[in-house]
Image (cartoon, rainbow, N blue to C red):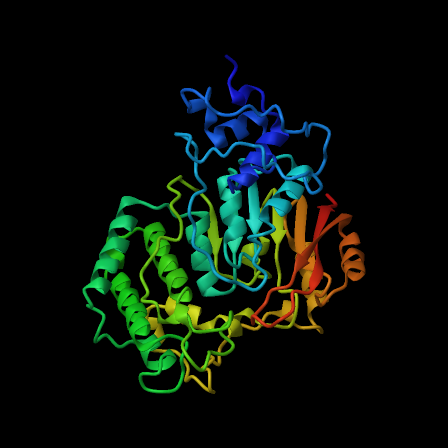
Length: 427
């Protein structure tokens, strides 16, 4: 009897990937999709209902108008199916978590494949795009000017969830469960909890937990590889963010602790991927010689869209990312929220400098293809961006409807256009 995997079309397989929330299907061949669904290893699917009632999708270019595939059988109970690897991520301005499949599919349309390509992710932010590309076989050159972001991206783009990482995180959780942090007082407890002042970014207990695990990691640094150290540090940063007492960003804190902030912080691994990676990660200005001297097959750029500086919206995460020794030299904190006075100021957030910065980037990046995310509310209009890019090569623009990031629950879900500018640079 013919198995169900032999009669499924490629588009139907993609639909199943979407239903099962399996990421990374963009640009995959039919055989690769079979492997992702891992159906070929199932001994028998004779009891799975027939898919003959699913409409043929072979001539459909987009699934957006296809009726719901409610007749496709759920495969959650079939042994051997690959589940989506669990990840932890930031709630972040401009996160591409919901757009990464759209972005990567458009990139694949232009460059053929991500597998074994050297891809730049030079405003890496949450690291989600780097992680997605790593899963699709790319070798990354990832970068962000913010320390916390470069560490999180390092974990997503390069680090593996080794046994040493697992055991160390379990030990940290046991220490917290045993209240070994209860009298610990470090930089976060002193400056970003109400222990000695009014700031309420974290409860006193959670601030002590953050300081304790951050200090213990540093004390054990010599016993860990760089990959393991950054994996654990990224996991601490993500876990701390999950119990912060802010509306969404750290430009302010809430007057009263919300339910999420009152939960006791425990450490979760940022991901559970254990494949080897040769990606390289930087913590540099995107306009630095280090970045501009890198040769890449394609570059993805996700710069700030407006005048909101990331350094001032996520500064506590940079504090957690720094070593206790580095914090001894931290400048005096000022103001109600305690924003550091040495925050990095991006030229891509300045109306008077952004166009010059884009010109510098487009002119000097060493790549054949460049892909830029931007939107209809950004500092540079769609028309102006096309004008700038056209000096350097052939420009294609794709767009999709999207909702703006909400810092507060009462902000309106205003629809905007998300753009992907595709630039084939002149040789």
